[in-house]
Length: 144
Image (cartoon, rainbow, N blue to C red):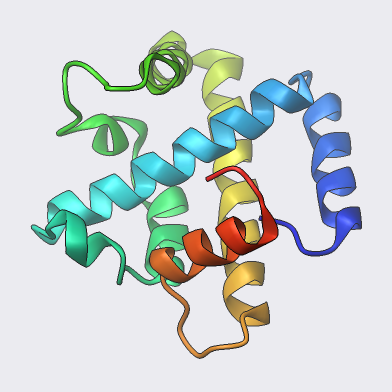
């Protein structure tokens, strides 16, 4: 997600200041991004193929504009990848426990929103999509 190494360093500093392990925080940000994209796709009745064309800006806005329960709505009961299922369950626990856990989600949503907007602004093409981000990550050898 980060093309400048200092961005990840700054994000990790923020995560530590919020008492969130950076590795766990990065995974929560990843699942937050997937949940935001899924929520937009469900709202717009997009097919899997159309998800590729979803604007990064729209996903960024959903990350901060949708409530936790809206992001969880319409998810499958089971996941092909156990790691994804576990990550969604951790997100659910944060959403349902309230108090400082909800504050963590709010902070993570802002981190994701900022990261996606920076990615969109720095993209070599106009109006980058989720598919563009996935392709750039694959080319850079980053996890998707």
